Length: 85
Image 1 (cartoon, helix red, strand yellow):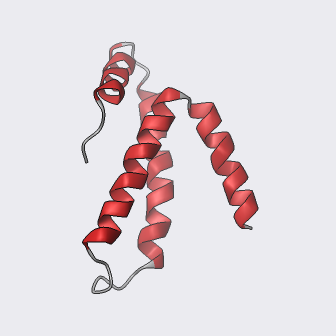
Image 2: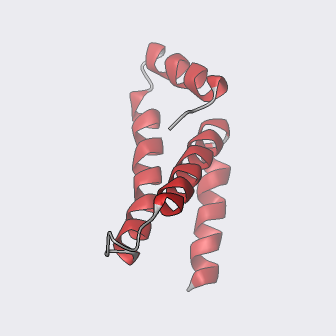
């Protein structure tokens, strides 16, 4: 997965200032979004290259948005989950 230079610089900035818990939260949030997709499609034969490309895109965009504004991303994610229910 190729992440933007902006994201990489933010991660470096956070690690230098010892805000590792924030970076960990980003990864846990993206994991929480990707794992359900993987569980929905449990048959690996049906998973094609486009399936993994879509997951990669979702993960990359999520990381970018989390790095820009974590609170806003979580708020939107909660609204989406509520709408789906």
